[in-house]
Length: 109
Length: 109
Image (cartoon, rainbow over all chains, first blue to last red; front, side, top):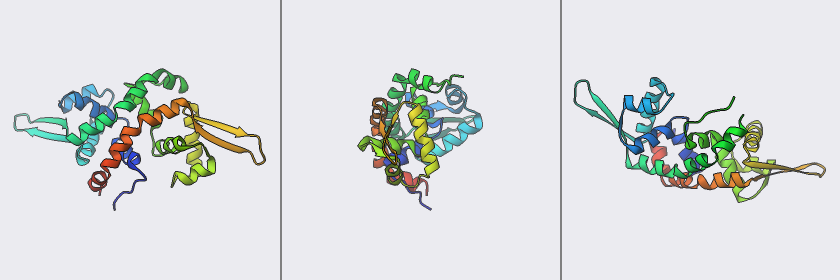
């Protein structure tokens, strides 16, 4: 069954939702990463959850997973053009959060 | 205990997270609304959930709740300047979702 969305923002937040996906996109926007590198850089994420998030990002066409034929196999994750465009669209939201971080933390303490 | 964030984007998504808050901000950006109006415009939200979301938005300083001394009391919700700035920061994300809506729906069907 097709999922329905009330607007584009609803759909975008569904795609990028959850605590980790924006951080994964942001990290991959700097440079492609192997799984272990990604896990170290996205602090606090478990192996299981990161695997799941990467699968969803791949299914949604935001992340590309490339297996290099080596022993042991080298798996590299990178942003697709669609993923890169989403990461750019998240920029202003990240800037807003950076600017108002103290206020947000204070309101929640 | 103060909550810690790994970056501004993490904090912004925590503030605006969930299915309804972006839609509430977007609706209030058009004009201030009474509770009943808001509930009709944010399609599919329950009274209980909308009440809770509005309380959190008020606590975080994004939404202002004004009670007019009438019988029955008239309660009007509006964006604070901080809420308006967050709504603007969500703009590019909404545009991205609008542009790629078909792709998103197809990937999830």
